[in-house]
Image (cartoon, rainbow, N blue to C red; front, side, top):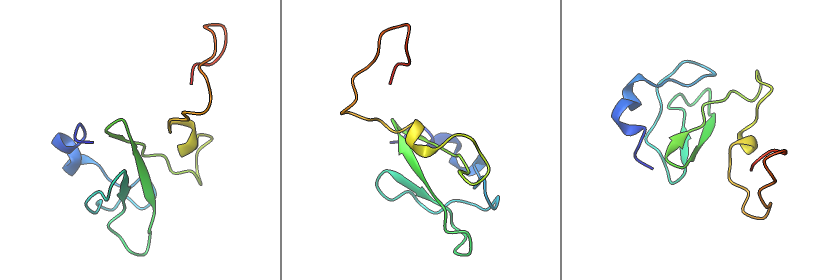
Length: 77
């Protein structure tokens, strides 16, 4: 979970542009209580997607251990 820590001070919340609070487990919370957004940390990297404004979702980047990887012709999970 530490690969982003070297540049953590450069990161900001994609929703409100505020600073982040310290990570709790595998979640990086926005430090602004009015915003309250949280972002998952996947393989040591925060997934900074504002789901309200993006076609991408956090679940697209989170590991799904139950789903097998597909062949090279398909999407690899």
